[in-house]
Every structure is written in structure tokens, then in C-alpha cells.
Image (cartoon, rainbow, N blue to C red; front, side):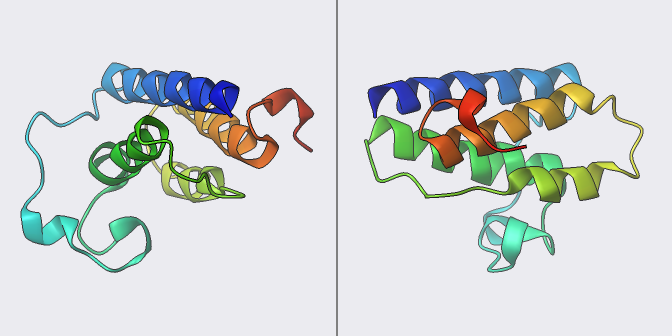
Length: 116
């Protein structure tokens, strides 16, 4: 399980760095009201990058740091692919990193064993 947590820690750092490289990382958080959305991915109150930065990454980091149970699966890649298909972002690396995240979750730490 420690290997999985190390892999998740590493991939979330890489995702954060990629969001910064793409210049879609915000210095200021959204309003508290926007963060309280009950909709999947907070799509009604946050943009994709805001959701990644202020909801997704902190939740994953909390799970890792507090040694909480990991989900059995993740499909953030599908959402990301859909959101980014109509943007001008150079998103190939971000999509790769998020797919790797999903694979780490699915395989318990070894994305090489994930089914394609």
C-alpha cells in the first residue's frame, strides 16, 4: 500500500506541475459557495482546472497523507478528455498523467498492469 501512496503522491505532484505549466493554475481560490457544489466535478460552479486544483488534488492528497482507503477505481481521464477536447491547451501530457492516475488507482500502484 505504501507503493500505491508513493505513486499517487508522485502523480498528483506531476499533475499540479502540468496545470502550472499550462498556466491554468489559480493563485486565488474560488468562493466558498462555489466549492460547496453538489454536482459531479462541480461543473456548475467551477471550471475544469479549478476543480482539479481546489477539489480533486486536495482530496487525493488527504487520502494519501492520512492513509485512508483508496477507491477501487477512477475514471477522471474520461471527464478530462471530454472537457479538454474543445480547448487550445496542449493537453496531451495532462491527459497522460491523469490516465496514469486512473491506472494507479485501478491496479493498486502499478500502472503497467492496467488494461488498455
